[in-house]
Amino acid sequence: MPSIMRCINVISRCASMYRAEKMQSSDFSACQHTYILTICNRPGISQEQLARHIPLNKSNVTRTLAVLEARGYVERRQSETDKRMILVYPTQKMLDVYPTVKAIADDWNEYLVKDLSEEEKILFKRTLRKITQRAAEYVDGKEKI
Image (tube, rainbow, N blue to C red; front, side, top):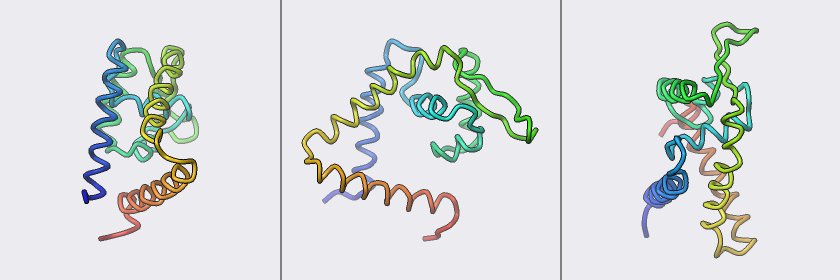
């Protein structure tokens, strides 16, 4: 039986290939879909919160946001309450592509669970959330192996 990480990595790589194929005609890379979904669902999210949410290191997030900003997809603003914090907002250009990107993500998710019963889907999502939470606890420093 393959390891949990092998299965997760295969799913992740296949998802990247699927997104790359579906987003081929756009000026987004397949890895930027998470930025689009997150920023549109959480306008005004801080760069630090975005890095924790994805999760990626802050320098990678900053570089990707610089590209998206240069292309006119996001606007970064200094927080009025905390001058050290940079908040990220979607522009209309990003909001216009959001439905397409969301549909691509939704279609992939539906494809993955197509052959599962409703009960299996519920159990799978519940189990996946637990595993995801456990992984996030390690990254957040709450847990040590």
